[in-house]
Length: 349
Ligand SMILES: [Fe+2]
Image 1: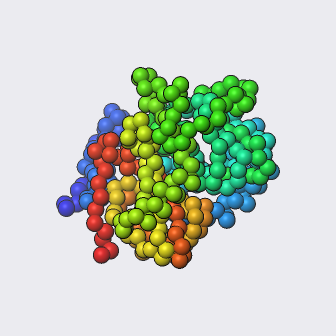
Image 2 (image 1 turned 180 degrees about the horizontal axis):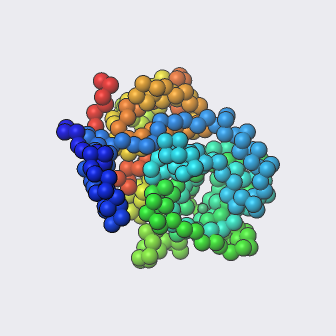
Image 3 (image 1 turned 60 degrees about the horizontal axis):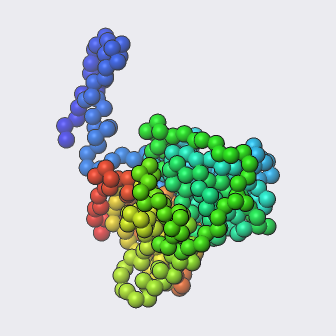
């Protein structure tokens, strides 16, 4: 590929005049914005150990009352994007959130979509548009764009969850904002969850409402996802034992921008993934997993999290002689909608 002229190859007076007129020559930057063969992601491979996060999160609980934090979160920030920008990847935001017994994180709604993957504790609830979703370890709870949500805690031990939002993308689009809800705690009026995945109370099922795509399932219990994975593993010889969290109303991904799934690794399984055009996040729900990204290996255990950039060779290794379980978040729904998604063969075989 031909090397192109740089800005220094142009007369300074010409460049100054372009600047003055708000004009920019493309050719000095062409290879940067359209790199050959594959993107040049800012996203770096990085892992966050829960044993590092937990004491600092508990300290935050001592230092900052919930009223002064609203959401008490330590953001898992990828240095490739600049720590202050609070991105795990160009599309995904990750945060570990702490709620202490008796605390209440007040009602609000915002344009970014969020999910919670519960890491530890019990007795807390997220209420989504008035529906009370218990937060048990491994559960996935949706708070899609525009839906009111608040968190409260009626239990006795700390509750921690992993937040996954499409905040970086929505912020980049200059579409990110929040609205405050009622000041009064409304959780007591929240309805209990009275159905399982795919079974909804008819009164909550508003098929004809054109304003929002509806989300009839807001809580995906871990017990159900785990059972599905174990059933697949038992009845099939498929290499990748994986379930995807979907919206049963649309049959599409559970949310529009970030996709969510869970993988079961069989005892001592080595699982080599194809290269993908999007960044991915892996979070261990149960077990011990080594994740090798290109040549670097990351040893992860329960509640540890890893982010990988696009077009990397990712290998998951279950180091136990019993199954391990990994939650996965990725940008494929967003990329597919825009026709940007692709997969490639690995470059290490
Ligand atoms: Fe929120």
